[in-house]
Image (cartoon, rainbow, N blue to C red; front, side, top):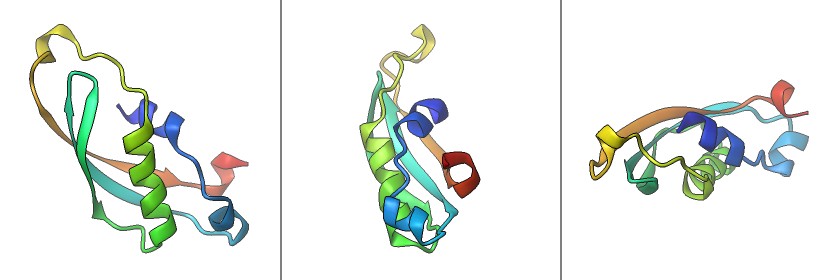
Amino acid sequence: LRAAIQAALRYPESARMAGMSGRTRVAFQYRDGVVSDASVVVSSGIGLLDRAALAAVRDAAYPRPEPAFVGKTLSEQLWVAFNLDAHE
């Protein structure tokens, strides 16, 4: 799930130009390859980054779940990082 979200992450250009970085902790429900109820648990302190983190959760192409998890709703939380060095 983390790899799918990081792949969908778009660093806001205005944040990059302003030298903004940080990380946002997001929570969401995952069921059968679909995400719902995405929310910010710990803000980066920068609304632009928090909104981009939620957009990545919403827009990611998620893998199908392993057979043991089909039909089960998983509550997930993870950090979405905005690191200027990694996005040049």
